[in-house]
Image 1 (cartoon, rainbow, N blue to C red):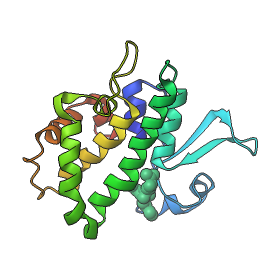
Image 2: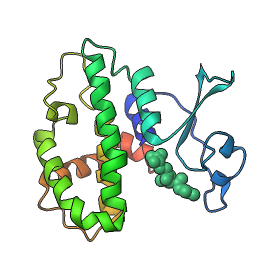
Image 3: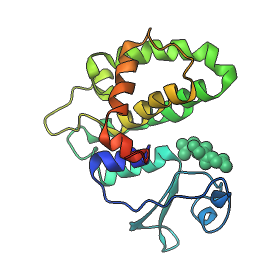
Image 4: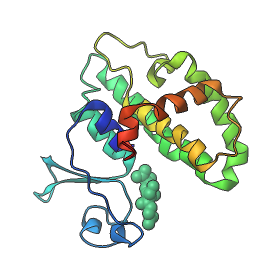
Length: 193
Ligand SMILES: N[C@@H](CCC(=O)N[C@@H](CS)C(=O)NCC(=O)O)C(=O)O
């Protein structure tokens, strides 16, 4: 997700690919960045952490919010505070609610149709999730936001991890998935271009 955002916003970055089959993510030096040994993680040397070293971040949602604030400048405008709160809401929804509904099998049957039906409505007309939240974009506001990045990225995982799931009841979700799959920044973010 963070790599899609970096690509979409044209933010320069250096990508470090770990050999996860060999367990590189569970060893030093990576565990000095994320003690839990999970990806993604970010080192941002434009910011100094509390120990005087470059700022290290883990959790995709925290990384995305950092990028959206400091590089995407999504919260600079007159409604920046509200936009930030909505970004927090959608990132927590993506990582704490949507991901759990998709990837925890015991939750999938109960939660999936309910969440997809509502998301399908929020995505109608190809609008940004912030617009779906009743937040009318103003001139200069980004139309594709960090909230869209996080939620669209999880939706785009669906055909990859669960090709058996029938998405035809959710045409707006299907449209978002097709757009992501044809989006050059998404493909670069997935390392496919
Ligand atoms: N909630 C975390 C999830 C991190 C996570 O579980 N990453 C997986 C890859 S998607 C991982 O590193 N798995 C390897 C492992 O746990 O050893 C986030 O969004 O960053």
